[in-house]
Figure 1: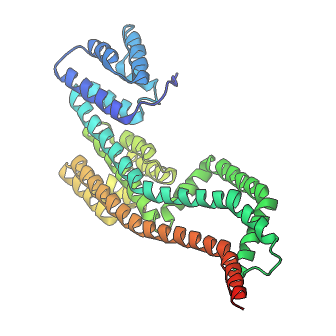
Figure 2: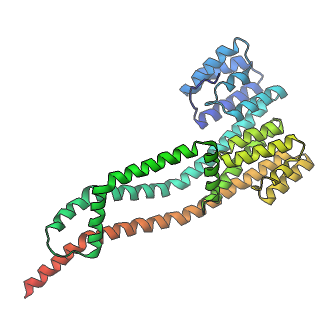
Figure 3: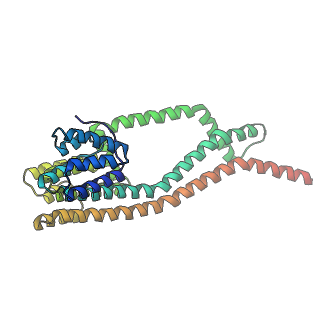
Amino acid sequence: MPLGIGKVKSGNLVLFTEQLAAMISAQLPLFQVLVNLATETMDKTLKKVLNEAVSRLEYGQDFAEVLEDYPETFDAIYVSMVKAGMNSGKLDSTLEHLAKYIKQVHETKGKVLASLSYPLFLIGALVVLIFVMTKYILPNFKKMYENLGSKLPTATQILLKFIDFLEKWGIYVFLLLMACYGLWFLYVNTVQGRINWDRFKLDMPVIGSLFFRVVLAQLLHTMAVLMKSEVPIVTSLTIAAAASGNKYVEALILEASEEVNRGRSLAEAFRNCNIFPGIVIQMISSGEEGGTLERLLASAANYYDKQVEIRLRTIVSLINPTLTVIIGLAIAGIMVALFSPVFGMSGALGGGGHQ
């Protein structure tokens, strides 16, 4: 029965896996290795998992089966590779491959988040600006202008009407947005809804191609590392499909795995998916024919990692100046609407003083 303890940070999991590989390579007993690592690790979640694993190993349970009961800490990829390593007698080299894989995935996610952090900051700044202006600043100007008695500029009138709308209907707009979000959340948590949503993400303009490259890189990396560890190809496809992070792609890969199970080649099965570029199909076909499938899958994954970086730089180079201009125009528009009546009054008073 799966035990929900919690996730371990990628960096700590990489360190644990590297240490485990080194100690196994030194031919130390697995039980003693885990006892030592449980004592040394600073990660509280990992320490708890390892202590429980040590207790269960004392009763003769299999190491991979023990890990399988902690899915939040050790995912299906981790467990499958440990099983394959133990069955082949190459647990140390398998763990080394696994550590490199976890590190690769962590670095890719880090690059994506780092590249998107500034655009997200700009969007957050715009939202905060609009909230502060409409909540605290604009109402004060509204009271002042209502006492002027003179006709206000069009821009100011539009802004005041916007404030009136927010004061009267803002809570209802917020509740409507929350209701729409709730319906969307319920929909994407259905099987077909999640598949449709994940397919839509891949078809989105501009960023859809980025999502596709990330999914493809993750899928190919997972397949490469599993096959390198001698995990059976159908099992590798099933695990890699789930690791892709996209339910639409996962459904297609599972269909491909069924074709492979019926005797078709991997290249032929992937060709029928209609999502893989021709170059990937050619590399897989060459790998199957030459017995270098794992190496060519890893090469294809590295290629798409580079494509992700290039696409990220392109998107960020488009988004950042666009958001900067939008924020600048929003601030300028609000400032004009706020202060044009003040300048109008100053002009009128100045003109009256010279007559």
